[in-house]
Image (cartoon, rainbow, N blue to C red; front, side, top):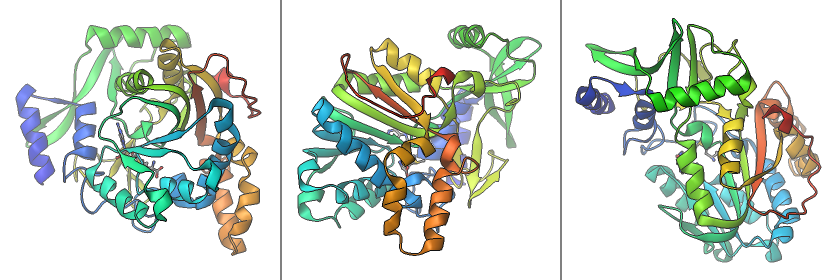
Length: 366
Ligand SMILES: C[S@@+](CC[C@H](N)C(=O)[O-])C[C@H]1O[C@@H](n2cnc3c(N)ncnc32)[C@H](O)[C@@H]1O
């Protein structure tokens, strides 16, 4: 109710709230948003969804193997993790390193104050020589020679939603009249221009009655990283597609999902702050924004491919119980589970990198 009151107040200012602002309030409003309240838990037994680092530490072991293999190619000294959730990835990452691979610093940039607290409590349990490397930053500062990790962060970045009707594009907004309800406003010419560019690239017009998302915050998020970091490898793991598939006519309701207790829900206009909101990643958009900042795409592949090539099967032998082991491997690798829907994007600002990445190449999808 408290959060609903805040949303009403915001609606009153303009007579509507845009979907990205609504999503931002639902997820991050101080003390009331889904990620930003004291009861948030990403522990699978209490959470509403499950992420790779929470499935098993063997997921992070793969990331560690990748990091150890490539860090010397580029003199990587620091780690920067965005949106570290419960802190599981950071904890397992540091714990999985041998003495000579320990980074100078492991920086965490986390939007939720409550998750930051949980991360701090978890990291405290590491031996001092590891926990002392971890530092939380409110804003990115100049950090060079870094391995950057964003695991399921981009899907939690608020996005605008648009709708086509009678060949006109509208932005979806939320209004209030006793209850919240979806409405539409005329599309701002800047957004309209961007949407027409997407239509040109995918070589088809969006059909009428088609709902779709365009994330205008990615640009700010990525440019801030590229402005502050020199000599980096950036690992993005998330569910999503290249733009041709992202804007497929069959996805006529867009890709947005609302999750509560591991089940999809369909009403996002009540119980604000009590369910997760996420939107698949348009990886072509990430590639385009990156290339405009002279950041180069090294690889785009599936989670299955990445995990298999970084030793997930070998690492899984540490799970003693055979049933647990096979369930974990199924969750991480099966195409019907996380294996194919989750993608791995690797970006790098090094022009003359001589990496030999032998992942199955999905770059043609972008
Ligand atoms: C879906 S959770 C993933 C958590 C964790 N990476 C994992 O895989 O378990 C999204 C995380 O990103 C954080 N987040 C969202 N937007 C962010 C931003 N702009 N900067 C830093 N963290 C952000 C959220 O607070 C949350 O910790």
